Length: 423
Image (cartoon, helix red, strand yellow):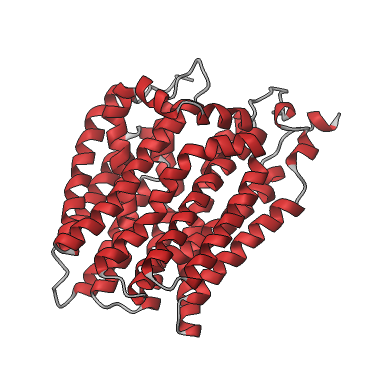
């Protein structure tokens, strides 16, 4: 058997794809809960701190536009390495930031790096994982990303207790990025094992498409693709945008809320880490529910839970038991988010055209979801500036319930559950 025809196994790309992703995610998961806190320490008001935290999602949205072109030009592996290096530069800017606005520039650059890294790892797996293995590989990749968000805050909490400050946590992200880049440089290239993307084969000899080609297609005509699929993107895509909005709102609002009610920095990291554990624990169950019962059975509980959690939080700020309520709502939001794990990717795959490459549509779908994810934190910051953080939480809760209505109406229309074939 020639090298190019060597049968594929998931273990063969585990180190090259999964471990660098885990490291990058741990570093990112460690710093994200601390962004509003660091901004506040630099003199930012609560509203400005929320705006600074929102910059990571704005960076991801902006990064979505050129990331396909970047990956198609320099390759998946190089794109991940350079994205990690950009993240290192961004974190160093954050560490040296003399004021909140310089911190915001660094956070924005982290968002750009995350967008490139995200598309590159997706294209990397598409290049080397045959169709028969792809769903398991991508679901595992998603679980590893959540694992990083689970582990990162615990590392942050421990370091803050040891050092008494947040700077050491940012250095963890630097170490994680350098570790990810080093692994990608030193580990054997899958092309040397499977003969390159176009020669990677399933055990039955089936050749699968190259990820670089998909990335190149995805980078061409993003807004033209959005216009071409405007009917479904305006309807169910609005639901996807609201899913992205609720997830991003949760990420920004929880640390912002904790700062506003006076929870200590290590305790914030610990609470968010425990919530990350709840979120991470449900990623496999979510996929099982969607496959067995249909997409609605995770979409509606997830959005109703996210909306209700935001609404409950809105009425607890000034209660004597506000810390206990914060912990309870953090767990409710984690449970709701966890039960919706993989929902956006699954709906995108369901809706993607079957007779042509799905990459352009999936790029438009991801951009739609990320648009909601970028707007929501800015809305939280704006509402906090003109009113209160409680009003911001309440408004986002209403949007979450509205999103549940949209998903309940349009999922049966555009992504109906298909009956199982009889044995």
